[in-house]
Length: 220
Ligand code: DX5
Ligand code: ZN
Image (cartoon, rainbow, N blue to C red; front, side):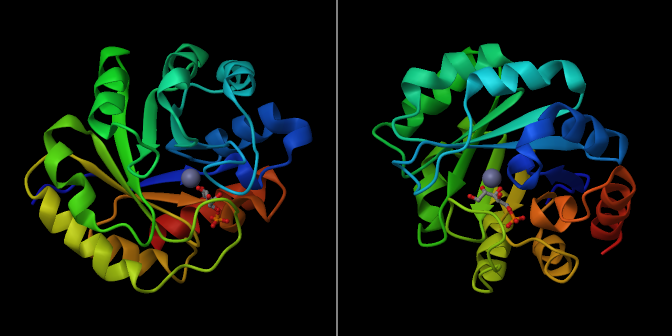
């Protein structure tokens, strides 16, 4: 099985929205590998966050990879807008429908890295037939919609099963929701290499606290 580097991806959902640019710059300087952008539409998930215009405004604050997690349905009409806004990676939900393969192809044609994500109750078989079309699989370890929820323990086995399904393919395995210094070891042991963390990083509220939180996660 391929071993990809551990990457820490702070979710700005937990940042101070009144100073997002500064927050993005601070977590980048604090050692973030990717910036995780949680886009919510109040339809696919019961919460609303931000869209492509906000992402576009943030682009000049960092050179870090913009890892965009679209919790929207349908996603297809908006993929181009997110690509143009400066997202480097775009991940859609397998449940967002109606045609997952078409969404993945569209992201590929836009020249962006392609991701697919699975809610906690969605079986891994939902991605079995698109493995050669993706660069990243995201396993939700909480129900999407809100930060600060508890990691669902049953997802540890799912992460390991996803890793073995991926096999030798160079696919990033990302885990999102309730990732803290306590849950990160099980995530990494199962083969998760991209760790999304919102509250665990931003709760500190200062650049120095972000640095400590990111290195604590990496060392965990
Ligand atoms: C949930 C989002 C997550 C969330 C992570 O819908 O996709 O990225 O913000 O936040 P924490 O780390 O607080 O669980
Ligand atoms: Zn997310």
